[in-house]
Length: 397
Image 1 (cartoon, rainbow, N blue to C red):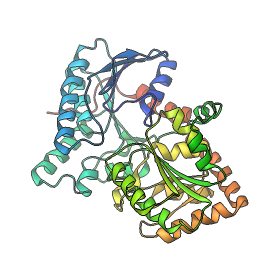
Image 2: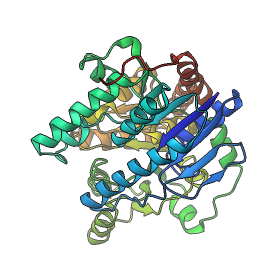
Image 3: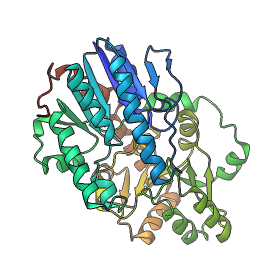
Image 4: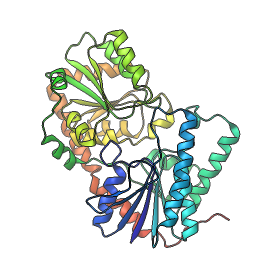
């Protein structure tokens, strides 16, 4: 079987490696996989994955119009590259942005092959709720496009129960939707731990400290300035440090605030490769997930959550939802409402001061990682692909 995989923000060695890891396992199952990526160069990986790039320039610091132009660039060139690909059997398109689903729909109709749509973020609901899209005409157009993609897809993969419920409320059949969360890659963590941490200054800063880590994007949606408030509140406690790793539109603002407030218990590192990030994360004592105070963001399934589990870290959240429930049911961490900065900090302090409680949360986190094992999730998606009908369930008229 030949699978055409479409992912604008495809990565192999950085944070969001889901598509890369899934592709490797699809190939192991006998498929030939061609990835249409928006960045990097066209190449073939050691495992046989064929990557064809549209060479679309995109990064988090881009202004709104530049991002729109990047989406259009990828949209047009991915269709061209997809049309050039011969003898494909199925199409797997993963969002965001929503226009990636439209690429899958168009190629599906042109080539008369089914496509599976993977929803990583529910668009346009997220940008609309956050106020990034306010034009009523544009909102109506995007909602119409969203429903056309859902109805034309042979199957839909979502990354959380909340996302599935969102689709069910839009009258998408439950039988058409499969939940396949992001995954915990414990093997990659073990491989990363075999190497020493080379940053001597970082090692000294972390030495004998209880480090709370946040790897990944520092954008408006992530609300990482929350950690500034936490660092200020816990200045008195020299044993607790906060560490951020990554890039994003809020990074410079965060750095300026840290300098202005003369905070020595919080530090920001530049983005690293996936293995380098795991090297640092696995040497920390707690992971944290943060989002802006918006209900729709509770349904996220960010990579970092599962990386924390793979590393055996207790996790603390500043929001509610399915991750809070999963953590608290097994004792691997806690979730708080966005306003509960004091309670958030108190929980961090309590685990930092109680080795026994930390060890219990550590073991619970490792056990929870097994539920989201990389091979288990990949096999679930592979079954979806294999069981997808040979023609689209619904098509545009």
